[in-house]
Length: 260
Image (cartoon, rainbow, N blue to C red; front, top):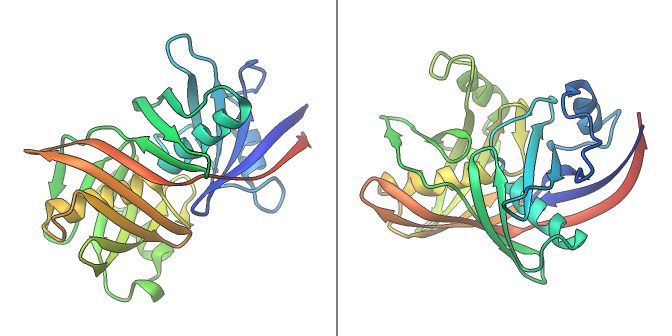
């Protein structure tokens, strides 16, 4: 079978995009998805995303981690999918789409900057050394020293597989403050089982964690990832964070065909 694919990246978080409005992609073939995402024997990506029709909204997002398994929400993937939908002519400058965690609204400008509304965060668990929340995917957030040389894969893996989060596991974010409203972030992603250059739901969790623990009073936070800069804005009402938006570039890399 031959597949036409499109490669997109959002601050270094890269994805194989497939237009599946014809429903021809074998969605249960986890081995195929993993092969397509493999960086040595396939196209290479942190995940694979299908764009599908939906009768109620502009499109549906189906997201797979690079291990081949369908996964929870991916913020950078969602932003890249919006840019992909615009390129296909499915949308103009605005989108309403459905993902595994519910309905999302997004805007995209002519420079490829996509602002994606994330799910409301109604519960934040604050512990002595870390914060945990679900921003569409589960995220552990902790401040560390020496972030530049920190062993993200080793420590992140130990937390991801620890008794804290059971078999389901969690994504793990390590943070270093660099200014009043600016933080450096490195993320270990479950499903990829390694550090990625950027994680959209991760930086969203970091921004909220830094606000709720008093590390910043801002409702717009700048996050520097290994792959570039993202911004997260929100409203804070009581224990609830709403109108949460993740904003940054979503870039087309190349188009190709692959046969399996």
